[in-house]
Image (tube, rainbow, N blue to C red; front, side):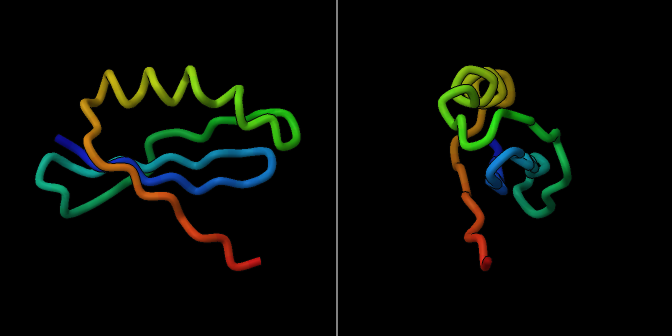
Length: 64
């Protein structure tokens, strides 16, 4: 199983994924959406979670 890292902004969602040992995460993709239309992310995110067999999700904490 793998971990998924999410960096949520107002128009983009940066996604990183861990290696099989869960030691190193690297960029997976960036999803773009209309200003604060977070619901549009559910389907593509669900597909990634299913395809990559994700068992843990980490959401980054914005500082600004």
